[in-house]
Structures are given as C-alpha cells and as structure tokens.
Length: 351
Image 1 (cartoon, rainbow, N blue to C red):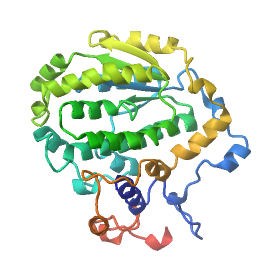
Image 2: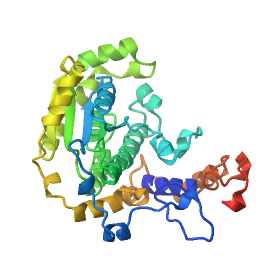
Image 3: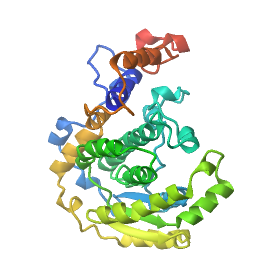
Image 4: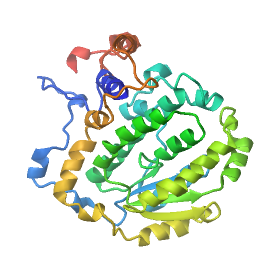
C-alpha cells in the first residue's frame, strides 16, 4: 500500500524517478541522468573518491544532540549534511513546498503518536513504516550524491538504525507482533540492496538525561513521551543496532560530554580505516549498478512494496483511488510543477 502510494505520489508530482517519454521540445524535466552510456564512455566512480568520500551516520536517542554534531562535522570536513528524514521528506525530495494534508503522506501523525501511542487505529505502526520509507529514500539520495560527486555525506540517523524505534514500540506495547513481522519482511528485501554506512557514530546519552531535556526544552507533544519508551530506544541501540552495524561499519561511540569536542571527533574520523566488507569489495562495476538503482526513486520505492496484508497499513482499492483523485484535485497537483494553470503557471505549451 505504502509503496504504491509512494509511486503514484512521485508520478503525480512528476519528479525524480519518473520515466519520461521523449518529446519534440526540451524541458528541465528531461535532464540527462547517469546510465550505461556514461559508463561506456569512461565515467568511473572511484576516480572521484577522496579521503572524506564516506557515508557517516550519527545516531542517538531523542534530543541527544546528534543533529548539532552531524552538522558541525559536515561543515568541518566539507561533507554534505542531511538532517533526519521526517514525515514530509518526500515533499522535500520532490521540491514541493506546499502544505498537504497528512492523509496523503502516510496517513499518520507524529503528534498523535505522542498523544496516544497505543491508539487502536494503528497510527503508531503506520508512522513507523512510513518513516522507514522516507529514510530509505534519503539514504538512497545520500548514496547517489556520494557516487555522483565523490563528496561524503553525514546523515542524522538512517534506514539502518530505524528498527530501534520499532523494537522500542513493541517492547512498550504500542504495536502488535504482526507489525514487527511485517516490518522485518520489508526490511530484509530492501535495505540489503544498499551499502551500509562507512562509519556509524553513536551518542550514548542516558534515557533519564534525554527525558529531562525534553521536559525542559521540548514542545508540548514531545513532553508526553514516556521515560520507559526512551529507555527502550536506548536498550535497542545497545543490544541490537550497535552489535549488528559493527559487523559492516566502523563504530565510534561518545558520551554527551565527549561529543562537545567536535575537533577530536573530526580527527577520529580522519584516522578511521575502512577495513570491513562490503565497502572493501566494491569496484567501479558494482558502483555503477548501485548508482543506477539509487538515482531511480521509483525502483527504491518498489523495494518497499510487498503484497502483504496487515490492517494497520493496508488501504482498499476504492479508498486508494479516492485518495489518489483527491490528491490530483489539490491546487497544482494534477501535473508536474510548472504545468498547472490552476496555480498560475504560464506558457505551458512552450515548455
């Protein structure tokens, strides 16, 4: 359901990942993309790589300071910073700045999750699986940027650490066991298509400190988060994420106090040696095939689209068509940006 909605949403907005048919006129929509011809003519990924050509993720509990650290590291190392992918990441990816009702973007709500995490309508799991989809799209964009330009990328969380929230939700009894099984089915056929981060940074901030900070500085919905949920997130990071990611990525771990010394962390990153598979096994040929995948967001979305029924996220055909046509009826949504007369676009016949 989510994969199909994602694909149709991308198709409606006419953005990244949509197959464009050749026409007589030219347009910015029909920009050239990397393909087999470019590879045949000699474009190679490894020629672009330098010392900081890495994917680095910064993880930690809520309000642990990971965003501030990730941005500071990116500035000092000359890398691209990608903030955490939120519920509306798809709009940012497609360049759509309009405000769209939440029912067209996952049919879920973060505020509702904080207000009633055990809501019987399945909002908690819909929100979590939607965020996984957004993080998959963002991570594919990070890989595409690295392979296309050679510039490293620092992300605030990623699809590889997303499961800690699922584990915490299940342990907190916010979701059913069937939701966990559904998530794992999707994850095992999707995320393995991507290379993991070169380096995973974890900020080890106790859940009690995080809870205190949220109560002091968080917004009203965030202040309703339970300490037990924060503790479950911390436990999932330490018992599940860190042992697993250390098999394929270099791991750096810091306390809140140590994270204040950005220069020291920069030095640590510069001295990190990438010695683990699968990065050490990559060649220009494998990078070529990966680049073809990650630049095509329709293919990425297809990885997440499995025909498995689960009430929390399954939408019937009639309801889906109703949502689809409601989306098209929104101002400026029927055609690609720049081609909608209802929002004042002009000279469409010349584009």
